[in-house]
Length: 187
Image: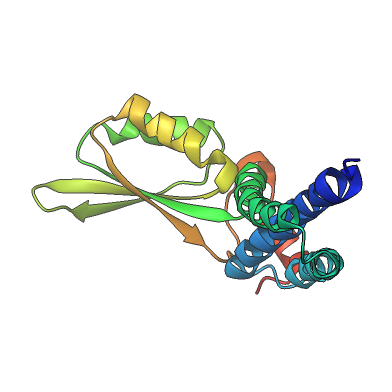
């Protein structure tokens, strides 16, 4: 008689548990990199709690190859799921730096209309004078800003960089992104 518990249920539990603990680990590592000092240990606690329970089940069933495959597949899937979740949460801030040679006013006006804080600096590029436009935006709004840049000035050169912390400024929806940062332990 086929042993459903050993060959289907247990590997499925191992797989799902690994997806959960590796997803938590992936998010935890990203939180550490972004400076979320209070959230990372909480995620780490649950990550290791799940891991130790699952490892004990694998160790009890060393003769079951399905457990090994479930472990490996759960790890791979958990990494993907963790990155997917982090991308959807889109925590953090990014600096968008735009270099425009001409017609910068349309873009600046649109960014201000969208409630983004904009700083403009006159500069000299490699070939001509340029306007440098600086914006610090929540990650969830970066794609929207890029679409505005492409719409208003498709030839503009821009860069996007992660920002670890910010002290004050003008941010969309009147929200101060540093408020959650204070609670989560970002300097």
